[in-house]
Image (cartoon, rainbow, N blue to C red; front, top):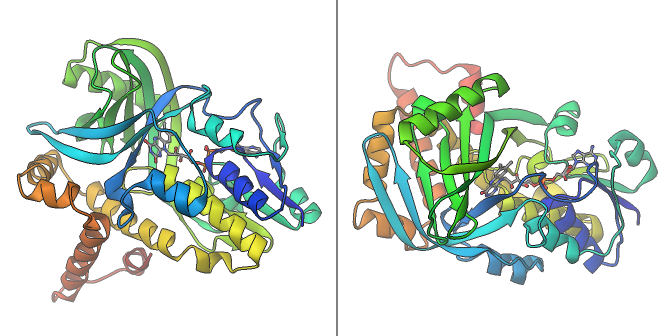
Length: 372
Ligand SMILES: Cc1cc2nc3c(=O)[nH]c(=O)nc-3n(C[C@H](O)[C@H](O)[C@H](O)COP(=O)(O)OP(=O)(O)OC[C@H]3O[C@@H](n4cnc5c(N)ncnc54)[C@H](O)[C@@H]3O)c2cc1C
């Protein structure tokens, strides 16, 4: 069987690895001259996002045969809003290197793959769909999915990030929620080590012209005195995808809508979607049916994103005060309660009850949004 994978990122390489386990050697097309983001940063895998899975790296190893070495274990998250600062502690997830270094996630994945990667080669999905039995779209973007009519935008963001020098706890991350510079998204700091860290601002509904202004505001409001050693920016959008397969073309990773809309994370679900696409190709399974849990999680995160989109700074203050209240923080962060699903289900219920209130009319679009 001949399979082409467009994109040697996280989901494309995970897909190739699983195909190889089934005796299929795909051809991988990568437009860059090497794998990995062209800048270094530190990604987080947050335990709270993927429950009931307790340890995502263990789950990837045991159920998807992908081994990843983290840079460190995440033991502390400090959240800042304009008026509240609170921390949570425990086994909260992992920090992983991104970029092109030897220990970056994509480099680690590439070492586990034997299939040929054709670098400096843009994959033309129409041509490949004619030449191969299957084409897996793993481009990290929505272009092909949109052309094929399967993509609906959910959250549009512009991101600016930097490597900064200072003094950091390698097991701790910081987050900031403040509409003054992040809109309804957020900013975060994740350490490479004790001396350097990634500082990233995700600004909702911003564009390239505006992001510099928000970045300046972020530094002014928070009063950082870190030394900046590199700076980058990019567009970062999430969307809802349906269906996930058109003819012999399958969508995985960000292209498959697996960048969750709540916080914009995709490492774990991107890898899982790549493996599931490979299994459905190799075993003749229906891809859409394999995706049940991942798609359900995407829907929950869209519900929570809709809530965040309506929040003010005052709401953020209340939220962080609540999440870091003794008792509640243990329940949310130190048990295996499926917080994302539970909150989404409760919110959805509240929304539905509101629509039953006399005088409240529901537009067709609101109804559709509620259903996705
Ligand atoms: C700044 C930033 C921070 C993030 N932080 C986190 C985090 O902390 N935690 C988390 O879980 N997720 C995080 N994410 C999200 C997650 O890392 C990405 O969404 C994930 O890499 C998506 O994987 P992918 O396989 O879909 O795409 P990618 O890993 O982006 O790979 C896509 C590849 O396809 C190639 N390509 C594109 N078009 C073509 C073409 N036509 N032909 C050939 N090759 C092509 C690209 O060059 C690229 O190599 C972050 C994303 C960004 C941008």
